[in-house]
Length: 296
Picture: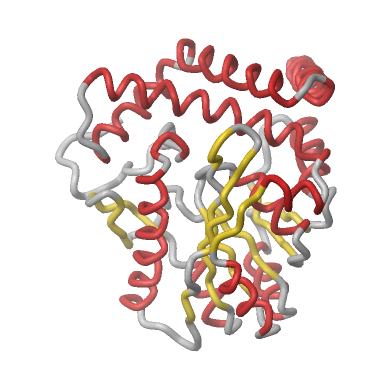
């Protein structure tokens, strides 16, 4: 019963933000984020702890940036709920592309492409934009705990033609197969790895990292392309395509870690430019050996 109630609230919000003008929808998103900032005290504390670790902020700057982050997350939700309205022409109007030559070069190879991004900007909208630009897209995704919402989100993600499969079971085999077919695999690779014993530096502090993305790219002769979609203002975005990382064959563990370090360094660079637009409410530095005391 509870799942049905949450689902109905979700669908009502979706209906409202698709009926009202875009400017009103974004106001709803910011208001939703402001409410979450006040009510979600535990997530607010995690965000503040992460921001203090990454940046040198006084108390007012910390409060302002944390509040801006929650408003950003509210906007991300609204943008995703409105995404079924998008088509290729609209993407061309709202997205400014930087680094298109890197994507063109990767596609001309007719080999697989691993799209690496983080929970930065609007990661949901990024996958939709790339699909509408004609990239054969496959994505790994975690299932939502509410099965009704999960199925609806899955349907929306696939409206543009992208294929989405759950990040469990035979997921590695499926990922390998799509890369071997010369398609793109969309990987959000910035969250902590619970069982990993390898680390990269992020904002000067070691964080756990899984190496599976590099393994897949090397085994399938695929380039790894870091791509991000920050919001520059309401309804306008920058598609930032970074220089590809080329891996091939069997790599030593040290080489895999170096690749993942390069990817996280590119992520850190864009976070510094748009600091409110990364997922600071995630416990990214959990398990870090650099911290004498538990951060969270």
